[in-house]
Image 1 (spheres, rainbow over the protein chains, first blue to last red):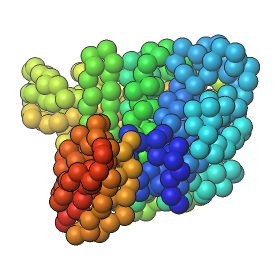
Image 2: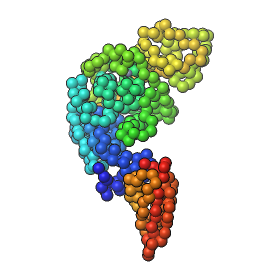
Image 3: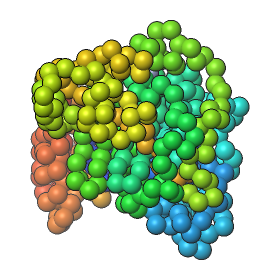
Length: 271
Length: 71
Length: 66
Ligand SMILES: [Zn+2]
């Protein structure tokens, strides 16, 4: 593959960078990233990865755009209310960058379909709002050996971790099982400041880009937490947990199943 | 005793050792049922909370579930 | 944009190879040699060829960007 004249202009700021250059840009154009969730986190992730020229973006979400989304889900506009989120998101990404092939998947991720989804991609991003799906993504990525980025937000706090299965700690190394339904407040109940997913999602997108380029140090083995009120970032070293149910030395979780107990942490219609 | 809790120094007066359950109560940790506890870099099993003692100088991290994202 | 195009050509070289670039006076001539040096390449030659055109010879060294 070699860059066209218009691509040389479009990506000139990348090409100038020592760690990217024309070859790096070609890697991005050949890269395939799956974004699960086209909400607060998925919005900046899809916009930035699209703008960066990540050649293939899968976006999975079954939801429709709702007026309460617009305070933070910056990929959706007021006229998009009622439209499937994946359709709205795909339109914006294509408008930013026609180089990108967008695969909108308008369905909920489940134990049945997730392995098929992630198999087609190089890097997976968790931009979901419920623990059932968060644990399912972790398990599927560990079992399928796909690197992925976890992200979570609530009120003024955010957290993110990159997982390289069997090399670095996974989400279950920290949290062994989903919390019971309704145990943890949701964004729709407790609120979230609209700029928060911009910070966390942009970090997740950065990780995807670094992974595709093969540069730098990924956010593996360390959970990054962010508090917007005090404007503090903290990094907590996380070792692999030998008793982790999915990546430990004697895993008890060897096939995917839906974590239905924890489903629906953010009520879907009010997310 | 002095502990480092989520990066900040916390003084617990009047005792030199507490187990994790007692520490969660003393420090008024939110959602003690769902918090993950890392003691000096190692994540603890929930079953061990009653039998694991913290002592002066220990480093504790309380890690919370965070959903959000807005699918 | 002249340096961007130059850099794409430099990426194709191996250490020791040189690239010859014809540059117009003005912005390209002032930018390209400067940026090439900043990015770890060596400017071996910079001569006036004709009218407002200069010839620049840039060498990729061991340790220059890939
Ligand atoms: Zn694990």
